[in-house]
Image (cartoon, rainbow, N blue to C red; front, side, top):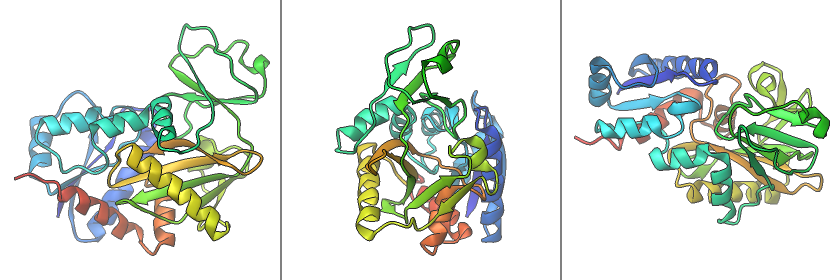
Length: 297
């Protein structure tokens, strides 16, 4: 196949996207495909890039966060007749990126979610219990996440973007990847510093990631069922990663769904795929083929 890989972007996750994109391109090239990398920044397509995306067999989106993942790029591609891109469509991407809206959606499908409150810039701090976790409403990779043990921690904090505040859950952390509507083995995440922040996610050895997770089969199956419920409720396609955190009693709660999860050497979707017998090159080829199947002639 001839494949265009879009990566980079302008979000706070740019560096992660660059790493993902280069790794994806190298793996596809090793599989014998023709690959071109483009550092895509929102603002429209150049005539050259538009033409190459239209004629390519697949457009692989290795962008994370911002306009590359929140439905704007997907809508721009479809406006140009390009439907053969990887990942979910515009509406599903937009919904999943909004953590509060995504929580409401999956809760309606029976997936447990933690209570939460949205704190807007310039607004009074809404009431929420402590300890709390505050995270950008439409961010990823734990960029901008604030841990507040008590109200004093937030005495001088003023959000510059909409934030979602949730109670800090002290139990185990799990993630379930979904590939083409099928769940992969559950991953348990044990960050060495106690919190799965940006450094723990992207520093080799920053966390112990166990796959398959050391759970009894019924517990793993329960997490996978919840992930699939979220997948269907959000109308996702191709791939995603659904994150869960447990409370002190071990009950899992949905945190978010990532429609374009990381594909770096320390990312969790490739780890789960490998545990399922799918090496990285085969994984990104499979994702590319899903997109290629949507090409309109």
